[in-house]
Image 1 (cartoon, rainbow, N blue to C red):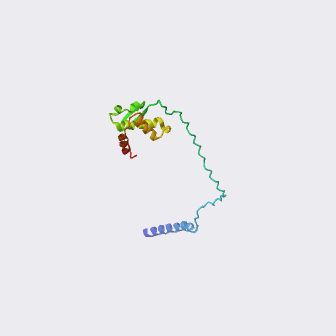
Image 2 (image 1 turned 90 degrees about the horizontal axis):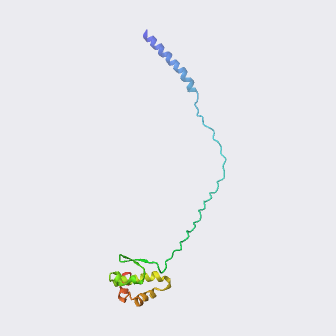
Image 3 (image 1 turned 120 degrees about the vertical axis):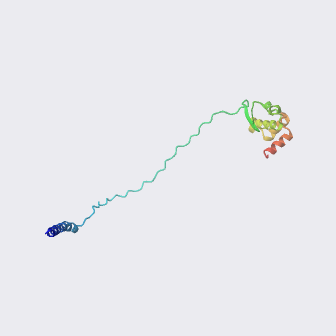
Length: 146
């Protein structure tokens, strides 16, 4: 008798399930796809480059070297402030005639600038101030491959 009840319940369950499954199997499930929205095509706007601001030069201060300004010279790691031509004397440069000559040439170039040529400055340091000798000029030329 148990078998009959079990099989009858089993049979009812199967029929009930088929009744629910069969209508679902007959329906087609479709996705809700939105319809595409048509966009109007707009013309491309040209890109206008940004113009940089013009660079305005900074006004230069009107400081120029005068003949009264001291010069700072660094000759062979010896730094000295030169106020006048006498600061290039040999005794101020550890009795080294090459350094005294180089001081005179550098100081003369800074003082005279474009007013005199290099030959005139060499002539001044050799003949007038007597701070350069032919041997010291030769040593300086060899040192700087001039």
